[in-house]
Amino acid sequence: MLLILGYIIVLGSTLGGFILAGGNPVLLLHVSEFVVIGGISVGLLVIASPSQVLIAIVKDIKSALTGGHGGANDFLDLMKLLYEVFMVGRRNGLIALDEHVTDPQNSSIFNKYPSFTHDPRRIEFLVNALRPIIDGKIKPDQLQDLLESEIETMEDEAHSGIDVLNLVADSLPGIGIVAAVLGIINTMAAIADGPEKVGAKVAAALTGTFLGVLGAYGFVGPLAKRISFNHKAEFAYYNTMSSAISGFAKGLAPIMAVEIARRSLEKSVQPSADELENTLKALNASIGG
Image 1 (cartoon, rainbow, N blue to C red):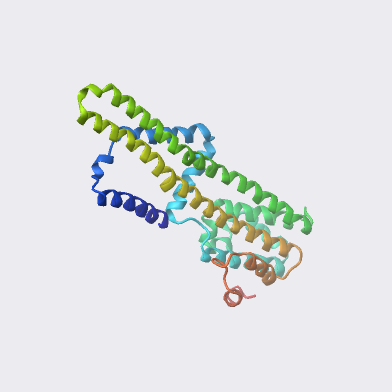
Image 2: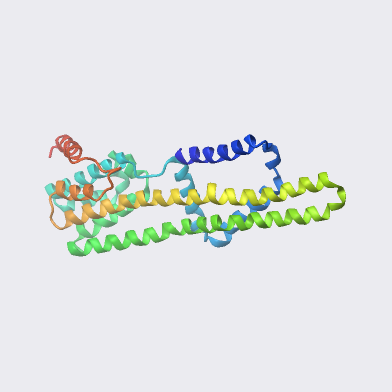
């Protein structure tokens, strides 16, 4: 919602200043300029992006409009989930986690936390991290490197969409010039129609330049930055899982493995030590730990 609010402020300030200067907003409504600028921008997206990147961009934009991932409650739920998983593994042996890893959709632990299960990638990452521990196919010291490598690959894939959006943002002023040049061509063709017609066509041409610059710096560029921040929050989620699971695999007590994860978080989403301790105590009591 903050993204939409920001767009409203940008648009309101632009039109408000124009009106205060004596301008008529209707003069900015030249459909041909919108068609040229919007069409070329979409064409750039299609040319520059493989299909999977286009799909990712659509999902990223939707996420940016709805507020993104990685709120403080998401991280607290994650720590509760990890603690519960670790407690089961500690009390009943790692083999007791096999049913949750084999059939995560029906896991009695995972399904307690909708903020975790709503994203299939989160489930897949946790399952893939736990499976080699359960199977004993990897040494604890090697697990962290494996998880960090997986997160790095995911980050590279996620950044592809941001690169394309930045390409569009960088190109929009130039696209605005293209629209303006097309408008000037129309103007020159209509020069015999008199000053009034010529003035209207020059105004339409200049609108193209205006829309290109405004689109770049007021809309697409900030959108790319917001998506970048959302990705940072999302991958903090995976890094939290990675540090906690790696600590547990090395033999740390469940509460200490989760504490390591807590300390890795930014202050904006990090629960306090007392809050986490009280939450885990209550959870421990509910699961009979």
